[in-house]
Length: 346
Image 1 (cartoon, rainbow, N blue to C red):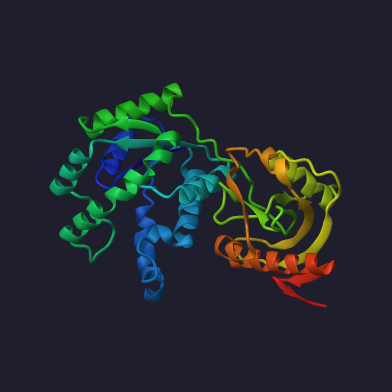
Image 2: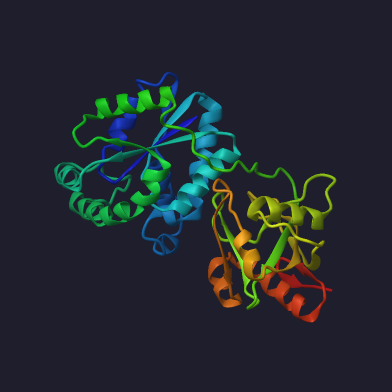
């Protein structure tokens, strides 16, 4: 199990987490900020210059999950993790990755009045693992990130167990958290558990359209980027039938016919991914009231929308967009296209 202690910079996450490992039996302190410090030494400077925060690096989010899983396998018990997460898609990606490794996460949020938070930042800040950081610059950085934290409070308070530590010591805050973990008040996050593949996979996606021929995309909680409705084909299952099943499970929409194949795309392995065959089918139009049938399972999908091809280019990762682009051409031409890494062959 992981107890993830979230909160604004300066909220007392680290000091609380260190107290918490004395209160939860067989617990270990795990600070993902160490990974950020290591990446500053490992990555080319030009790559680091492209982001304002190491959390924006996909490799950081991947290593946080991999590091937690490796440490958990080594020491067992409970990992206590102090780390600010204000972007919901990053929370979903990290917690989803942990869920895929069967590591449940209890999400705790430290809150306090803004005046108290600003006073704590002014009095003392924990300087990140950056040898070039100076105290005033770090204070300025902390002040600038208060607004981002306030904007995130909507989804944070709905997702996490909140503890107001404005008048509490780190020890008293840790005691509140430990009690909430023991009683179950700090519940396990409801993030879908999608086991990572151990070999190449076969996946079936289904394109659904509105009256304007815009395509329906979904926003999964367990990985970054938007996606088509669909999923991995189960053993012994016909791919088109798998697509029909996934559409009903994900969206609550029953397709009246077996969808027509548009593209077959071979996705090459890109470690840590294994790749495999990706099929896209034409599920037809959801006209009028049928679009109102769409119901999302909250643990798996965050949202859905109809988008134009140009809008899809901004939402989909490049490889998925190329797959969509050629599927739309195949639909226009009433043909089937064979792709390798998103490029037509044969």
